[in-house]
Amino acid sequence: MARILLKGSERAAVPGARVVGPANPSERFEVSVLVRRRGLQAMQARVASLAAGKRVGYLSKQDFARDHGADPADVARVRTFAQAQGLSVVQEHAARRTVILSGTVGEFTAAFGIQLHHMSHAGGTYRGRTGGIYLPAEWDGVVEAILGLDNRPQARPHFRSRRPLGNIFRHAVAPVSFTPPEVASLYGYPSGTGAGQCVGLIELGGGYRPADLNTYFSGLDVTAPTVTAVSVDHSTNSPTGDGDGPDGEVMLDIEVVGSIAPGARIAVYFAPNTDAGFLDAITTAIHDTTNDPSVLSISWGGAESTWTSQAMTAMDEAFQAAATMGITICVAAGDGGSSDGVSGGGDHVDFPASSPHVLACGGTNLTANQTQITSESVWNDGASGGATGGGISSFFALPAWQNGLSALTTEGASVALTMRGVPDVAGDADPETGYEVRVDGTDTVIGGTSAVAPLWAALLARINASSGKTAGFVNPLLYPDAQACRDVTQGNNGEYTAKPGWDACTGLGSPNGSVLARLL
Image 1 (tube, rainbow, N blue to C red):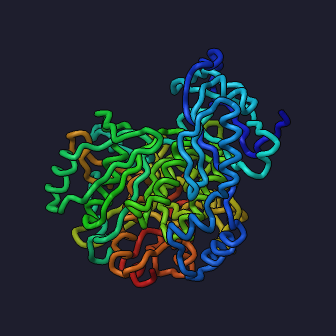
Image 2 (image 1 turned 90 degrees about the vertical axis):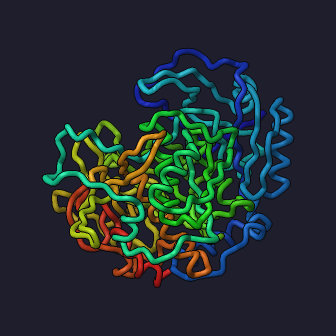
């Protein structure tokens, strides 16, 4: 059978990983196959209009599926090949352009010309591959990505628990904490509850306990929101009991959104922490006609260097689809500073925050009295703590709405943006000025840019509810309006420093809620 290389599928091993042995040939698992979309040029034109700030009409999910879903003939090609290779078709979804196949290691290695190994590294073990994926020649131009052959953990949650009080803190003042509604009030959020909206949360592990949520919201004297767990790729709401693990992320996201926008329904999409699981969760949420979220909050990610280009392209295409349907995507920019936690030096930005079709959310340290903000600076706890992610993408092109901007280094050099700059906006993220939450039966304080994505998502839910329309792709609207965000001009995240206007630490700044409500 003639084969071709699937462009962008090349994988490297996790740094420090070693091959333990070949993967078990009888191990069974599932793989997501992404086929091309119909009406590509028309969709790209619509996205370009949105990027130029034009408020073109949004597509319904039904219209999008009809005009830009998968061609049935392409799905049939995948089905026919799969059956010939002994693979089972588990699911076909035209709007998501996804065919999920089930098979064994032996069947998938034969089908796609790869070798799968049992790999071991400092963080654990995984089923891995190196090099590219090879497709049957007749799939050339038809299949855009094949994800899930390699099941290494793809992302990490971007939250930071407050360190014990016995530690040495960077700030001269004692640490403080806020409830999410207090943060919303300090940022001037418009009144409202988000009634009639649905906020989707993407979670790659962990879970929540309804009893904890009821206790938390009751303590805030807030009506508990309706929370629905949605299973993706067989993952479920599965609390681990470890507050410093993924439960902390899940509970933080729900409690921030639910306490600020208690009238909004919350749909939590649980998926495996793999490239396939991450993409499937996002496309499931975007095309969910039952819960129909108008805003998605994503607080998981990893440095661009840890992703394959096929995965980043596929996910960015999903975000473009969301833009055409009026869905806003808020994504945490990461907690590892300008290096994004990558060892060996160099600057890195976090993906999916680096996609130009999401609202990338950086972090600040917030100081306030009872009624107003007294100061705000870049969140950076030094080498032993965390710092807001931010910098310049090495993968995504410069979006039109960032033309003419520059980043300022801590050495004082001005670097003109030639690629996508991160983040777009910011909000309170320092654990020393963090959020009062409840996780696995314990009241605690959490920070990180993980808190900023749901903070912005809750704001957009309030705005959508009061305006009666969805804000959609907001980036091109925010950049021309200097009053829409509170400019943060003090501090750095390692390589980059804050300055007036956009910077690679806090973007345009933290939310100016009342102005944003009028703008959107």
